[in-house]
Image (cartoon, rainbow, N blue to C red; front, side, top):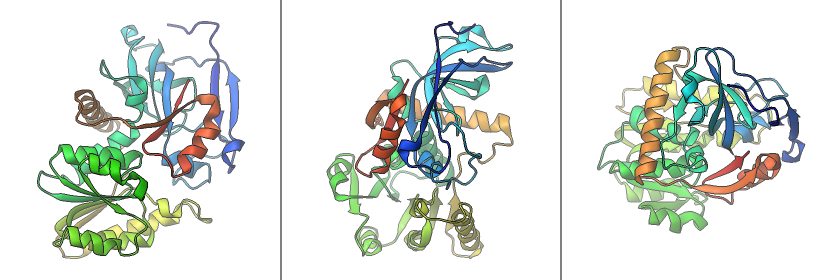
Length: 345
C-alpha cells in the first residue's frame, strides 16, 4: 500500500538544548515502509517526562541533536511493507518508539505495534502507552503488589502516577499518594489518601498512616529523597525507582544521577534486611527482542482492556495540534495539569 500523493510529512525537531519555543516544525515527504515495517499515520502522541529531559540534554541515552522526539504514539496503519499482512492497513495501533513520535507519519517495525481495542479512542489510548506500560509492569511484574497491601506513589497526579494509583486500587491495594494540594480532592475520589509533597514531615505523615511501613514505594523523583523512600518500606517491602525528576534542571552529566541511583539500589540489595530495591526501565531486556515484544504486547493489552472495561480511566490534560508542540511542552512542564498533554496530527 502507498500513501496518497497529497499527503505531507510534518514533524517536530528538537535541534539542541533549547527552550520550548526553540522546537522546529519541518515538512517533507511521507516515508515508505521497508520490509517488515508499517507506516503509522499518527492520531495522538504525547509529552512525557522523557521529552522534558531530552530538551535539556538530560535523558540518559538520548541520541545526538537534532532529532524528532516523541516517546510513543497511537495511529492508523497507513501502508505496509514487504512481508507484512496488507490487512493490517486501516487498523488502529499503538507503538513505543522512544524517539520519532512527534510526526504525522512514523515508520515502525510491524512486530512493535500493539492493537488498540474497539471502543478506545486514540487520545485515551495514547495516555496509556508509556505511562500505562510503566505503571503495569512496576506494579505487577516488579513489586508484585497484592490485595490488602499498602503502597506509596510519589507524584500520584502525574502521567504515570495517575495510572499507577488506579491500577493499584483495582488490584485491591491501599494507596497513599503525594501531590500538590489542588489535586487532593481528585485523588480522594479515586480512593487514594493524599499527602502534600511539599510537607517537610512527609515521611512522618506516611508512617502515621502505615506504622509498620508500606509494602511498596514507587519513586520517580530520585535524588537524596530516595533514602526516605527506602526507609519507609515494611519488612519484605519493595522500592521501585523509575526516574530522577529531582535533577531535571541540573547541569553536568546526565548519566551521573542514574548511576548514583543504581549504586544505591545495588547497595541496598546487598544488605540482609528482607527488603528489595529496583530501578525500573521499560527497555530492560530489549536485546532479547522477541521476549521483550511479547511482554510489552501482553502487558499493554492488559492495560487497554482495563481501560475499555472502565477499571481505569484516561486523563487527557490538554489536546493541542502537533504544530503547537512548544505550547504543549510548556504546559506539561508547568506542573499545573493532571494527566498527559496530548498532541494530534
